Length: 215
Image 1 (spheres, helix red, strand yellow):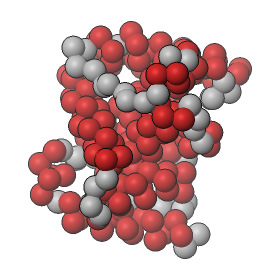
Image 2 (cartoon, helix red, strand yellow):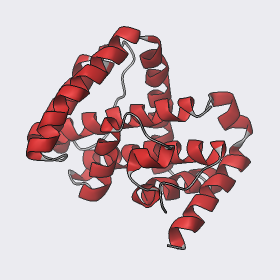
Image 3 (spheres, helix red, strand yellow):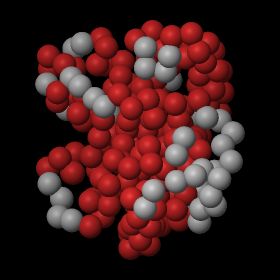
């Protein structure tokens, strides 16, 4: 799908939620297996550096890039929840909590923006998924979002969670999830709308997935 296409407010919110669940699904994969899909990880990480998009899809490069997140979101809205799905929702609730606190903290917003801007040099020199770049992004999360009393408790295999590379990737993805939650709010998203407009959200997600499959 071309990012120059216009999207409804509902579709923009759906795109943001798709980005959020793509990040969280990768967190779960990492914590349990130590591995992730590089392209999906890079899509989420790149979203942190897109600060002036023309539309929500541009944050992820193209809607096709978050097909996995949109598919997971559709499943969560349409089917009976498995334990894995409930784990995703628990993470999502936590991310929503943190994004609210983050948006209220102007000093922290400025700090994250400044440090991401400084990290852009590492992106250009090493690449978006290089260990040095990911470590720098993870450090931003550690020194900002992680200072809130409320924290996301990631469940998984101890062996993987103790690996520096995996821990850095998880923190990077959590920051990307925060970015998506902020994006969702910037497009008019709120908890009450999510509760009472699930059908509309599901319809928007289905339309986006249909467009992707038509490409």
